[in-house]
Length: 171
Image (tube, rainbow, N blue to C red; front, side, top):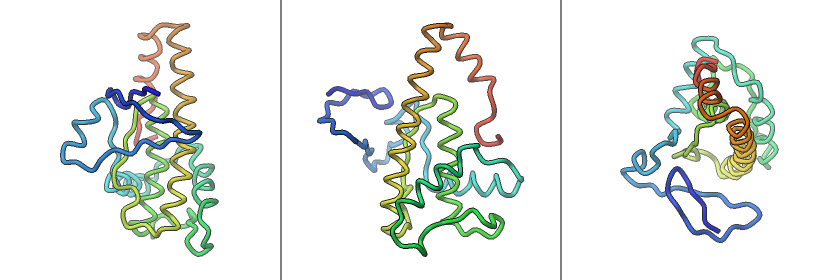
């Protein structure tokens, strides 16, 4: 099967679930031109900013947090959104990851992630895989809907609606 990931063509052997994982290389940001690159540091910073400025989480945030928690077999490793002002960097990382990806997907922007599993317990890394699959499926539905809207209303009209939508981080 031939696929295009962030502007680059690849030949892959597709299975029912296929995760595309980018290489750790120094020109990562240039390799995926046109994609938003979300790093673990960005996720932490974005979520800390949201907490510090009393901004709202994405409306679907708790649904995807539940998907993440379902994938964790060790009960004490599950994460709850209980007192964000006292979160450590690990919680800011996963919460920022979920919230930021949901908001970026709503803008129909391709996303590549880097280092999201850094400093995570292996049980949380497994859950991160489950979460990535769920977020990928959501992203595909959004892109398919976007393509349909472009067919009906034209690219310029749909693009203007996306550009004039909410700010990725502040909403």
